[in-house]
Image (cartoon, rainbow, N blue to C red; front, top):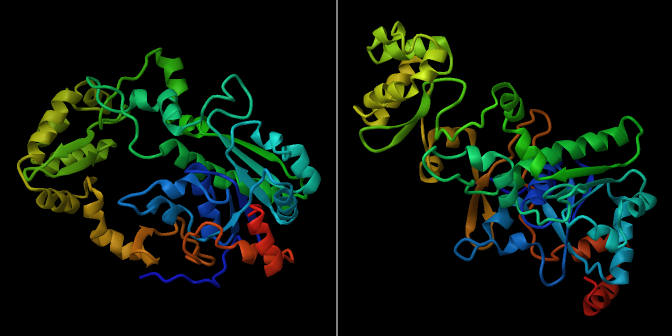
Length: 401
């Protein structure tokens, strides 16, 4: 079990990030920073908190526990003038603010970019939205599902003879969070190293999801064709697909180089395929991919998955298992690398979650604290600004925190 280390430091120690976001994208962005030592303060509405707290599995808010680890929770009713005074003090000490309100909401609260930079000229403001801070869609709802639909992803995902397929998880949000983590550090570096001013990062969900689809627009320009859904095939190389084994389990094959294809043909004792005009070059294989998949699939179906994996591993062929989470929980690779770690949990005793995803040799990320209860750190954070117990009680009574 991986224990929490409250005193652990990291390469981002000394950075203070105010996280005003709700649900996924912002929490993904800030948990990356928190894992590496940044002081991430979740600013939440009193009595309600981040909506991620209510995403529950069997009554347990697993999303909250995983994506709010290493953070502190402060409740602030930002409609209240006293809360706004506290917020100003926080801004003065912060390196960055991350928010995902509808465009214009921060301005209505009195904390648009101009006001924030008046308080703290070096502040970095990250503004997460569905479609961006300007443009014709700026006020449209920004749920990830809409972005996954419009970005081209759903249209290309699935099988040609079936409907488009949306992802089964918050893909657009997660990718925006990953993108935002690097953007915020670039902007902070500009302040710290180049002596630059603070700035605004416009981070819509749409742009990062569109960008990871590769040369989608360039290919359309060159070919004039809209790519069809291909299931598990790949537009650039063959064979590449998912194949079912004799025992009903599945494997994935990617023979995406000429050498790998030729070695694969030899490993299934069908060396004649190498000179077969249908499969001689990658272009030939792509043109005749249905026939090729039939041949590959027929071989896979002759043996159980364990045999298939062992056979191709010895032959140096890139075949791997298609795993579900049950497979992964006990997989030797997962255990060897500690990719899933058990951490202490108040409700469940321990809770498995992904480890810190980038492994720094000198300043690794660490588990410093579990995801906080709503307002758990009110006294701790406000105490840093001289708020004593009596003043804290008054703030609670008045609904400020």
